[in-house]
Image (cartoon, rainbow, N blue to C red; front, top):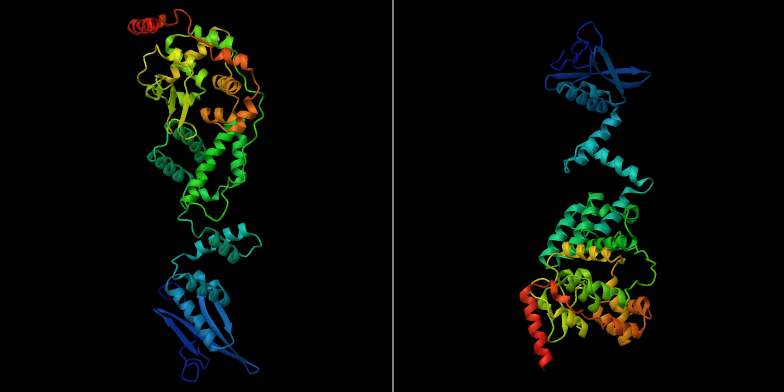
Length: 445
């Protein structure tokens, strides 16, 4: 019995002619050794046909394997001896041709350092996904499409990188907040490799959200910006459409834009406290968006030149815009203390506007002040191009949604809304005194 536990049994030592020295029986024709393990090879002849047998014991049973020539038998004996020496007798169960395949596979994997089991598992997963397609052809096509991809990165990693760069580039807080809100939700839904997110998954996710159509469209635009960024940074192949390029924003069918009548706006302004005048008057008589108004400071309001200069970082469109100050808007703004932000506390002031409308039993449609201004402004100037330039919109939108919503007479009434007598009693005493002095000075001219 050898050191590994297999019994190496022979029929005695063979002489130079292959005969046993004991009992006259033929002994092994060869003995193959590896370490302390020895495996004998026997010869059997029948009707002129030679067969070589490799014999050894395993688990108490004698195992004999036949081969047509001595070379093949020695290879088998060498393998058995090695396995016996290393204590792996169970591996000797595999057939010779299977063993050759095993050795060839190990030789191919030698340079890669990949274990055989891992290689087989990877192959089976790929085979399952590929179906009847050629794995080689698929790998070649994949390499062609993705050869310029820098690395596979998770959606979360690319989102974090993009938001950080946008902040460094000076993007507005509102724009950053919109991107962060949408893309954080997107990354939470698709946390894996960005390159594996497909069109149908994104479309199904957006449609599953309980949001208005305009909100879904806004989210899709943010995701399109994100995928464009990812492709520009080689996280996605540059010569292939991104997963969102085929997704289109949903057409939102709306009725004509709702507007306030001059009488309703007069009631609102005449009942408003002085701290709400900037929101109401600038919104109603300049058409500035509420989000833009929230970012506006008084330095942009020039009553002498009669303009409001909306800087690129404040405008939704990202481009500078100059808005004319009408006579009645100047009358509403002149008495105010114009320092710092136009809307010092966004949440508090907008909540106060809602409470004022509720107290007057007036419904407040979305963007009603902007819609009202644009409608009355185009009735006055008769030019969609001019109004589009002032309001930061396209002429086609102005023409489609705001033309002929009101009359020129109504527009004249709108831009004639002025403060009432005693309007400024809610102003601080020092401001009221300054206002009265200015009024007397204008009256003496």
